[in-house]
Length: 358
Ligand code: KIV
Image 1 (cartoon, rainbow, N blue to C red):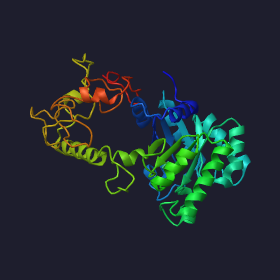
Image 2: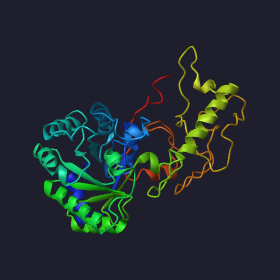
Image 3: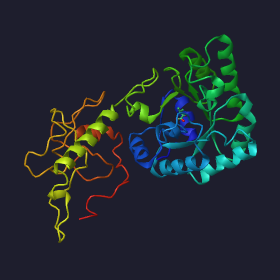
Image 4: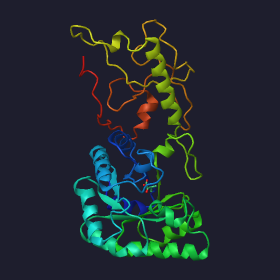
């Protein structure tokens, strides 16, 4: 399989093919997005907010970024992986910036790095590119400058600010950036910048006329029920799915319904009858996720405790049919689950395979 490179992304712009980017912070999500043929995975410093629970990206460290970049790079077979240079890792000097960019490549396994800032960072970008590391720029709302910007607010409104944004974008292209993220910028301004540059412009809250789009994966998956900014579309409501699964688990444990005999070990090893499905089954029949198994023996290996939730844009399989809940777990796949794997590649294993602990 051909790996997506910065040259692939440039060719996609030239061909008018829109580029898809999602953030990823761990191997499981990265493998799933890779199997869905997302072109690039951004290990964003948004990890500080989505995973670490901070209220900004500022506390994220280089060591943490190296760790998360490694998790994602090991799982991405096709997608280009971009590592974010965190706050404080490139602002003080070009020497430090080069060293840290090289760490993300050498230790984190990424194919390029991203940094925030305009023409002021042209020299730093030149130095990193000269060292052999491709750089993605980031303009508009740059979260590492949240204190200077006075909050998470739309940038580039008004002629003067729009002109400054365009000048910064040109300076980044000139300095050697292979692509540019534009965040929270009026659609018309973003469209003008995308037209003016030869490098791909990837938008987030920047309208449909960019050369591609990036979203924070936790946002587009609906992992935080309270967070719904204008620029995010939720393609799933996973907060509700995960909560229902946890409540189903809690209920079965409290009732003594889980683990059942089929989840328990006997004194001597027994051959398995049939492959087991993964832990999550979806059904379209409105079954009560907290209901104990009808056979009174507590659970049936993933079929009794089913979750029925409407997922926008996702058609649920027929009642009782199984979809893989954990990458690589054995079990028949429904048609809709197979369709989700757009290129039919198997998702890499990141959990103990069924059959290892019998
Ligand atoms: O850190 C991040 O996730 C980002 C995207 C929002 C572009 O920089």
